[in-house]
Amino acid sequence: MTTYKINGQTLSGVELKCLLVSCGVAADKNVYRELGSRFRLNINPLACNCMILPCGTIVQLTDVKFHLRYLSGMLSWNNLKLLRYASELGTPFSLKMLDGKAALCHNKEFITFVTFPEYTDFYLRKTTSGLPFMGNAVLQGLDWVSFQCLWACEFAASGKPCEFCFSGAEFSALASKSKPMPPVVPAKDAGEIARYAVNNCGVSAVQITGGSTFNGKREAEHIIGYLKELYSTQFEEVLLYITPPADIALTDEYFALGATRIACSLEVWDTDRARRITPGKIEYTTRQRHLDVLEYVAGKFGAGTAFSNFIIGLEPFESLKEGASYLAERGIIPGASVWMPMGRPVMGSMSAPELDYYRRVIDLFGELYERYNLEPAGCCGLNVCMEKDIWKLQNPAAV
Image (tube, rainbow, N blue to C red):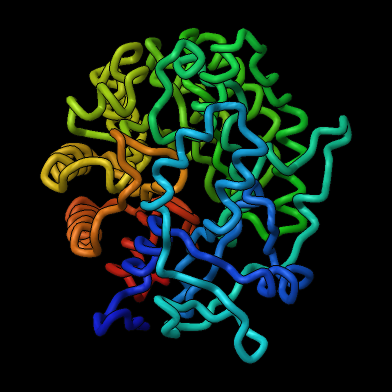
C-alpha cells in the first residue's frame, strides 16, 4: 500500500485526503498556469478541482488562497462575518511546481507529486438552450458528473439552512432580501449535460441533488423528469439525494426509472447538534421520516441501495459511531463526507478535527462495510466523500 510521510507519521491515502479536504491547500499560480491547459484544473472554485494521489485516491483541491476572495465577490450572504475566522483558515499544505510536476508539500516539506484528470472543455460549454455547464454541474474524480442543486432549498429559504451548506446560505440570503430563488434546472438541460459528460469526459455515474422541499409531490415531479431524461443514457450508478417523502412508495417509481441508490442524508446523528446544524431537517422532515424511508428502501431493494451521508468532523466520534452502526445494521450505507471548514463556520467554529479522529472514523466505517457487506457507489471515489476510498482499503484485490 502506498503511504505518505508527514511530521514523521505514516499516512494512508485516505488519511491524507481527510487532512487535505479539511485544511485546504495553498496552490501556487504557476500550477494553474503550467498545467491548466493540459489537465482539469480551473481557477474557478465552481469547477470543483481535484488532485489524484499516487495511490489513486481522489482529493478535492480547495485553494484557500483565493477561496474566500472568490466567495466574497460571488455570494450575497454576509461574508464579512467570515473575517473573524481568518486565523483558523491557515493551511500547512501547499502545491507548487517542481521539475515540471505538481508537488504537494506540508509546511514546505515535500510529501508527494500529484496528478490531475485530463483536460476537458466541459466547463466552457452551454446547453442548446444556453444554460452554462459551469455552476450547474461538476465533474468529480474520474467517473462522476454531479448536479449539486437542481432546485432551490425551501428549508433554507424559510430561514433554516444547514450550517455547513454554501447553497443553503445563498437561498437564505435571497429570501431575507425578498429576492426570487434561482429557477429549477430543466430536465432537458440536465440530460444534455449528463450525456456530454458520458460521451466526452469518461463519466459512468451521475449524482442528482436538489434542495429540501415542503411539497413532496412537486419534488417527485422534478426527480421523475430528470430520471426520464437520463433513462436512455448508460450509467453504472444513478444516485439520488432526496428529501424523504411522506409517500414512501414514490421511491418505487424512482428505482423503476433507473435509480440505483437513494440517499436521505442525516448529516449529523447527535440530535442536539443536529437541531442546530440541520434545523430544517429536524423540524420539517424529522429524523424519523429519514429513517423510515431509508429502512423501506433497504428492505425492499436490498442492502446497499439506501444511503445516508454524514459530515465527518461535526460531532463526537461516539455519536457518529452510534449513527453509522445503526444504519449499517439495517443494510443502509453510512457515507463519509469530510467537513470543509473553510466553507462556513459550524457551531461557531472553523477548526477541523485532528488526524486521530479521522483514523478512528476510517477504521469504524471500514469495519461496518465489511461486516454488513456494504459497497459504496462509484469506482474511483468522489472529491470530498471517502466511503469508496475506505471500502477500497478493505478490498485491495477488487481495485
